[in-house]
Length: 621
Image (cartoon, rainbow, N blue to C red; front, side, top):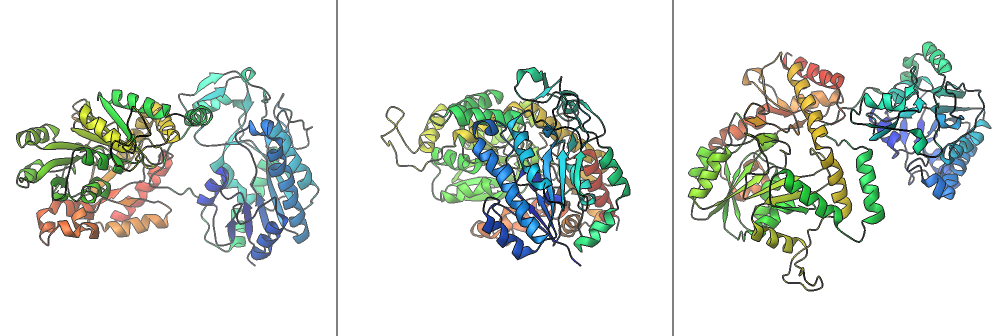
């Protein structure tokens, strides 16, 4: 018989991670909209609809920790009253309840706490969780998990050198959770090693700084837990029983995503500062613009809500008009070219080079006409085109050189950073990029006149002398201060983030050395920022990229296709011809033989080995 599981707090941090690998048709994740723990009717309706045999209660209030001191009402509602409501309804329907508590319910002075040791929380958060435990303990068909659990990698930029714990990562808790569902009572969950939090943090966050626990109030000195009971349970359990129970093909392995950010306590603290002091100014926008310009040795930087908007503003400030022509590579993301079309100008698609995937300088010359206003060079996947030759061509024909560096933050050509070469250059801070503000972008230039004009357009055409006067009619392209705060925090970690990307790239190269593939350009001339690792398969393999992508998806590995030539896409049919595929042979060939590998910041060596082993297996089929 199928036994359903309802999980409250599906949108919580742990719930989101649990969802990636703990899944199946009988596992239902709920949000506040589906099941409001403070509304009895809402709970009843959800339980009646799904009729679960188990309920895992994750919904709670945890961070920010200060809220449990400043707003005890919210703490009581979420962690005590909400939990009590869940207990009452589980009791009425005899639903097995698994409650996530914390090891902080113990006094935190000696460590190695057993489940039956005395309890005395040292802060309001732990008291609120203990309040929830009190109601759960009344219900016999329940399990309380006292967790010493944290995120991977360690998320804070500081760690206590004189406070101990025996943390277990979330992913490890997720692996053992299925084996615990039929247990009752209380079980401590942690690792088998008690150590200082600083020592633990250093393993995954090398730049973490040591601080003393004495510098904060109400934090336990040693909250490590004894896990003898947990080890005994795990020794006697068999995961197969749970797989049968769910009657689904649940896979408890990690889902490998194509991209994603790395966010630490540093960004959170900067955003918190903005939240407290930055609503009536654009301080972080201006601070980020200044430091980002300095990094690229540019005079001016203008931040926008997206890179696409930065390109649009530049073209508008450059007075690009209807029927003007701009030469672009056929292989790029639509955001490079769509602003050209939006302004009524015409993109002229040129083939790319086989070795670096960037615009072919030889092909450019034959495309230049009296209508040509600019050449758009794209630093595709961190690769760099022949910038010196592009400069010579643009100077000779008196046309502009635009540089799309959206994928090349940290890339360098002969020691010069990507973003320095164009008359105007652009970077992106999309959620998938090297640094992110969710969405966001900048334009970089040394041309003061262009910068001031683009800034005027960005800021709704308002006068700097009197912001209530519109000098020109314009839309608004101003980023928020909170967006800039995130970008600023990420930028502060750029060296670290580039190092992570390079490690991922090197692991892929090592693990794919058995087959013939061409990677992103990275040599003595071009130091690649390696935003994403990309491989071009030797044609002898006759790899069907769509089939390979589907094959990997079945293994919970999500890669993505290379950029389709824009000349092949419906949105650009008015700017192409039937002969374009023959003219731009390399662009079309690259798309058919190239794969963008998963490049998420959370990838580890094991993940990359797994990806590579399946790719090699597919190639050799």
